[in-house]
Image (spheres, helix red, strand yellow):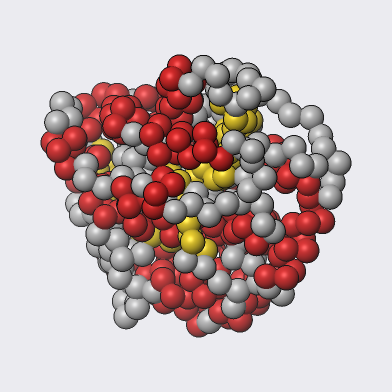
Length: 441
């Protein structure tokens, strides 16, 4: 699963057929309720219930602030482990025990609930939606209606690099695929892993494939896939993207042990800041991980970051990005406390104090007009990073939600499995699209 910056773990979608999606969701919701785990911050028979993931510290602060101002209708917040959360939410909806407010990744998983009539649409007057970054809101917008408000920081995927390692190898940060292959060759010659990758976790490998497809075919290819056109998996650009991924692996871009490295232990991150790797592709939460594990690396100015390289004759724009725009909070259509929930959304979610808290933690919240606040950041290192992320998102023509979140849940496992097989060159490039087309049918 993906991770979200500062506030815990991240972790699928447009369904191939709306009717099939709704039937599948109803079937899941018919399961008996199971137990839940996680602490509650407060409780009130008259108030709201809300579910989110563990370690959402800044989000929890917004709940605490609301509860202090509304002692007679408090929010009962329950926090869950990432791996269990989605299933518990489905079961709770099926048993009519779902919370008033629930946390999600947007995309197809949220749209499944929308199609089943489980989520209320939100208007501008409900939550002042125009204050949020437009490219982010697409992940919670279906058929022109908005079904969630952003709840935490932006998480585009960027290419990080060790400035000293690249300089020692005579390598510039790659702007094109050709530059990348040249960098791989030079870094290998110095016995450095060109690109650190936790391939055992599978989803980090998916990031490469997402960018390679976007750069090759443009954002329209996966947009069509996510909208229900399974035939687009067989598009020539999908095959070419897999060929590029396999070419990188064959060239030794990821070293010899990538398939034995998992992300959660931090080993792939450590390779970068210890100088054993030249680059790594990861979400913006990696900055906070590096700051915590190796503050001296940041202080010395050795961390660099840039956009993913372009492909020769590719249709995708160099300014397109992939990743996770934000997590979202949505409103259960069965809630009896809608007015209170809307008050929380409008006045406490990513309000001024929340924005300050995210910026202080090294994360950019998805709200408009941050220039003044960014200019006031005291650390020049943090200011440069936050400004980079802010501008990257604001100028992106397309911010594509990670595939394993954008697709329906029943396609996520086949996606990760086939991505890994392609990376390991266990299947030819064209077979990836054929397999995914079957999984989406």
